[in-house]
Structures are given as C-alpha cells and as structure tokens.
Image 1 (cartoon, rainbow over the protein chains, first blue to last red):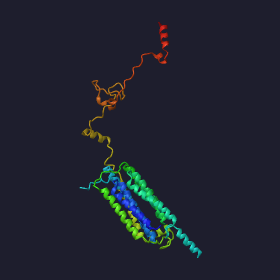
Image 2 (cartoon, rainbow over the protein chains, first blue to last red):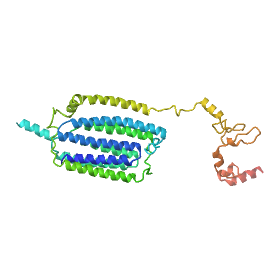
Image 3 (tube, rainbow over the protein chains, first blue to last red):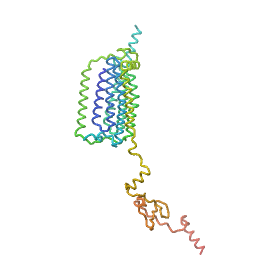
Image 4 (cartoon, rainbow over the protein chains, first blue to last red):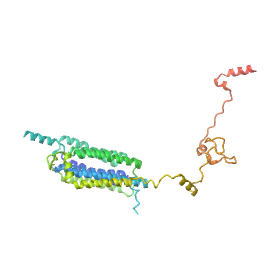
Length: 99
Length: 283
C-alpha cells in the first residue's frame, strides 16, 4: 500500500465536505462540513510530513487544529446570536443584507 | 552491527516508517471506508444530530489514521479535542438551537443543489486525478529515518513548536484569547430586550389599553354560594356573569346521569322478599 491512498482519501473527504457546505441549509451542519474539510487537509498534511520525513507538516496540522477550534467557538456563538434574533438556524433566513 | 540492525528493524516497525506494513494497510482499508461513510452520512442525514454523530465517527477514524502514520500526538489531540470537545460543543449548540430545525427543502436558487453536486463531483475527480497522477512513484522518507533530531513524536513536535515556530505559537495564544472573548461577547444573552414584565409595567400597560380588558377575568364564586369552578359568578343583579364560566365547561358534553332507583337500602342486597315481610309486619 502506498501513502498515496491517504492523499486520495483526503481529497475525497474534502470534496464531500465542499458539497455539504453548498448543499446543506442548516448553519450548524454547514459548520460541520467545514470541519470535515479542515480534517481532510490535516490528513494530507500528516501524510506529507511522513513522505518528507520531517515533522513540519504535523506542526502545521497542529496549528490548523488550533485555528479550527477558535473558529468553531466564534462561529457557533454567531449562529446562536443569529438564532436568538431570527429564531432560525437556516442560512437562507439570514438575508438582511440582501437588498 | 547486530544492534544497529535490530534498531533498524524496530524503526521499520514503527508507525510512520518508510514503508507501510500489512497492519497499516489493514487499518487503512478499515478506517478509510469508515471515514468516507461517516462523511457521506453527515452530508446526507436529514437530522442534524445524526450528522454530528456521523462526523464524530469520521473524525475518530481520522485520528486513528494519524496514529497509524506516526503522528501520535496529533492522533490523540484529534480524538480529545475534535471528537471530545468540538463535537460536544456542536451537540450542545444543536440542543440549544433546537434539533428540530431541520433543513428546508425549498430551493432558493434554482438548480443550486444539482450544480453543487456536479461541482463536488468535478472537484473530486480533479483532485483524485491530480493526486493519483502526481504521486505515482513516491517513496516516503519516513519519520523515523529522516530529518532533524528525531527522538520521538512528541519531543520532536515540542522542539519544533518552541524553536522554529515559536512566533506562530505565541500568535496562537492571542488568537485563542480573542476567540474566547468574542464568543463571550456574541453568545452573552441580551436579556434586556425580552426581560420579564414587572407588576408596575403590567398595570401601566393595562391602563394604556394594551390588553383586551383592564381588570382580570372574574373568578368563579364571586357573589355565588360556592367557590367551585363549575359554579358561575353572579353579577349584583343575580344574573350569571358569562366571563366567569370556563370555556371548557360549556364545550364539554354532559352525559345524563341515570335515575337512581327509588328502592330503599334493602333492595341493594337483592333480598326483595324481606322488604315485603318488613312491610307486612308493620301493617
């Protein structure tokens, strides 16, 4: 088995996450899809670290995790405050800036 | 020499080595489909809680894949932080927002879903094709054999973080503090807007005419002989105050009560002859 399979799995997971972001309407599920995309990139970073024989890729993945955690905290807070004013978690309902 | 060969053999068996062994292949072919199934289930599940559980499964198997590739620290961080903390946060917000808020099936943009699926398919084909063609004959160096100061995964990462990436690491702390502050500002409940109305405010609103009537509804039993709900209140002229009657009482059908049999208590025992005997003795 070659390490390329890890990269292929990562590509597939990234595509699935991208489709989910575009298709789903629930803001929380959209957020989960973004998390999946970040995880897919992390997998490829770890694989690249192994291919290159250096730990830099793993450190990058570590930083991606930190940024993802911060993003989740702020994003979920935004979703909650939108839900409090609009009483909906659907991203179609947050359209006050539309017109 | 035999010691160095033994060391090499041990290094070859370490996860994240140059060549992938059979165990890693087995782990990959089990965990990879599980991760894919979790991702597909997350995108396709109608219930948001099911999506979260599917994503937790996918992230768990991804963490195990990290470990299989020698990234022990990242694997454990993935399991603890992602499937532990982040997914718990997701579920918490899901319960707070209401898990019934499922997706609307209304398409705001015509054909957007089909276009998105087409785009995703194209992206997958493009990425898989590019990766599959570009990495055909890659011989991984392997973490154990390669690079700088390899003395284990966690010490190596710590060394890198606190030397080469020190500035980025310090910036991370600023990012985390900002995120925590932002979450507190954003998620703090603005209770001023929908605070509970006090007694004085209620009275003033009643006098301003915001309610249907100024006074509360008359309770049952006012000017009446009983204080049961079934007894209507009487007005000073003796008529029934219609507002004092509960609407349920009017709407409920009352079954006619069967007439009680006029017999005396001895009839209940079924001994009819005895009553005649008693009457006869009295006569």
